[in-house]
Structure formats: C-alpha cells, structure tokens
Amino acid sequence: MKISEIIKLWENDKKLYVKKSTYSAYLLLIENHINPYFADKEQITEEDVQKFVLTELRKGLSQKSIKDIIIVLKMILKFAVKQKLLAYNEIEIKFPTVGEKTDLEVLNKNDHKKIINYLQENFTFKNLGIYICLSTGMRIGEICGLLWSDIDVESGIIKVRRTVQRIYVIDGETRHTEILIDTPKTKNSIRDIPMTTELYKIIKPLKKVVNNDFYVITNEAKPTEPRTYRNYYERLIKRLGIPKLKFHGLRHSFATRCIESKCDYKTVSVILGHSNISTTLNLYVHPNMEQKKKCIDQMYRALK
Image (cartoon, rainbow, N blue to C red; front, side):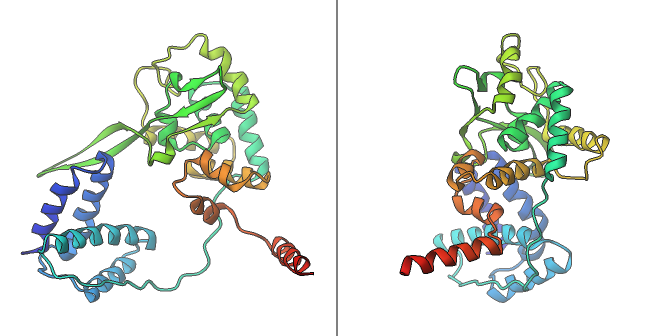
C-alpha cells in the first residue's frame, strides 16, 4: 500500500477527533510537504525522513516548521503501524546545530507607554482591541472573537471563550478559505482575566450603551478577521513611528512587563493561557548573571 493511501485513511480517522482548524492545518502540511515527498513510497525509513528534513532546511523552511511537519508524519506512521499497514520503524531525526535563540521582539518601555497613551487619548473600537491586548496579553484571534457579553464589569474580568481565524479548507479537489469562529487554542486558553483599573474605566461606561451580542472591536454583529485587524495595527504603529513589530509582539510585551514586575511565573502562565508553565518559562524567563550569582550565593549560605 502506498503512503498516499495510508494518509487518506488517517485523514478520515483524524477528522472525527480534532477541531476543524487543527484538521485544516494538518491537511495543509500534508498537501504542501508530506505528499510531494512521501506519497509514492510504500515504506518510510529514518533515512528517508532525515533526507526530507535536510531538503526542507535547504529550501529555507525553519526548524520549527519542519518539526511541526514531522509531528504529523509520525502520527500517520503510528496510525499505520496500529492498523498493521506498516512495520514499526524507529525514527530519530537530527537537526543541524543552530546559534543562540534571538531575543523576543517586544516593545521597549518608552514605545509601550507611547502606544498606551495614544490609545487612551484616541478612542475607537479598533484601538480598544489593541489596548485590551496590551492589558491582558490576549491573542489576536481572541481579541477578534471577543463579545461585549464576555466582559463582566461587575467582577471586572474579561472571559476568553472563542477565537476567530481564517482557515484553508481542502475538500476533495476544491480549495477555499473560510472564517472560523471556534473555541480557543487549548482548554487552558479558556480563561478569565482581570481588567486593569485604566481598562475598567474605559469599559464601564461603554457597557451601558453597547449591544452585548456585538463583537468588541467592530461593535457590530459580525467580527473582523485577524488578517484585516493585523493590517490596521501595522498602519497604526507605523503612523506612531514605532519600530515594526508583529501583533503577537504585543502579547510578548505584556508578558515581558509582567515578568519584569516580578509577577510569579505560574500566574503569568495562567493569564496568557499557556498549556504548560514551561512554555512561559522558556519564552520569558532568562536569568541574568546577577540573578545566577544570587542563586548560587543563597545555596552556599544554606549549607552553613
């Protein structure tokens, strides 16, 4: 049996158990990367996968992107072994050593204050979304999916309950994109975030006049999609003379300021909706030499 046939069986099985957005992402990786390289094979060896990795690296694909493809490929192979369609074959992939990770792109403190001040003085519903992101660390899809009913002024919290995204749909021979309103990324992403005093002051009077069934950043019954909102944000920071920064950099900026303010890591992780605290630690916590020295001194004193 060819790998392409096994992939089809796996797709039909997987469709029953994963979110539509996840399934769509899997199909895209299969169509663009896995099928072109492996479809006509009848067995996949470790050597085949290693060659594939090196080929994709030479094409300029990042290690993270390739690792995502390998995860899907291994799921397909595991399914094939379980169904007795392929013999088990251990696959351990090596990646070339890369230099140290570059620093996260975040707003410096001056630019952070600059954009906050601008948003406070120039109210629009779209600007409010950016302000909410800088005050809560919410993802762009979560901001786009935020309804006025998700904001509880009595308790002063924002409930993250949905996300908006555009997905690529593969249906037989047809290809199209569609807007999907779905639950957030993971179960940990469904969360309640307290509002800052400043955000609360902006939101409270608005809640008296808005329609609870409308989306916050459009103030209409229909949401905007992340791509459109991202374009608006990019034009805004360019107009403010702030160095180019991805929208996701606002989330990183919020988290970085939390860590700098000595917030405990577990709380930051929960606010961000990370599935595991290790994600928070790996992204944002990088002890400097002074902190390392203090740690070692504390350990030594404890021995006395």
